[in-house]
Length: 193
Image 1 (spheres, rainbow, N blue to C red):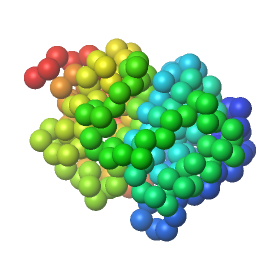
Image 2: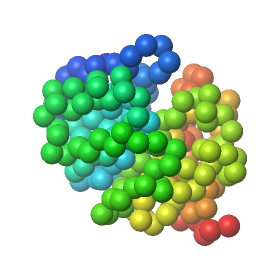
Image 3: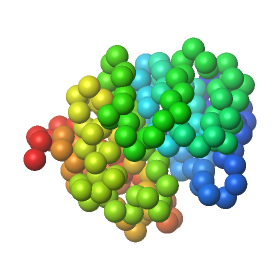
Image 4: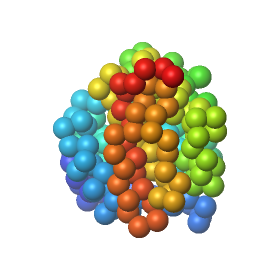
């Protein structure tokens, strides 16, 4: 795994341990950040289910202002801390060793986030109905104190299990398929249903 662009282009980062996590490929990451061009520089980012930090570190390399990494697996946390230290990004990073499913309940961010990556385990996110755990998380992320009015939530999921079209104020704006996985982009703008 490596950083593909920006200040730390070409720098390697430690991959997630074992076979239970599925790191995003460089090709998909490159495509994702091409879609987000213009939204990264100066952005406040949250990387939920961060693993070893691939998405958040890529955003910081592309001059995001700050990233909150949320991960509770102790092995992934150890590698995440090493990756942040190796790139000397401690001052732009915060690690929350907490439950990402409950992020909207415990987040105490002083400002809303401009970009939120949501990359939960596939097995836990196949049901994305508004009443499911994923649906409740996405609805919670729609709150104005969590996501800025021009913000974007990027959900990585199995292509066979697409998300709903809206979660309270978050509306699905586009989805892109990459083999068996997909990226869906949700943006604030809807009214609470």
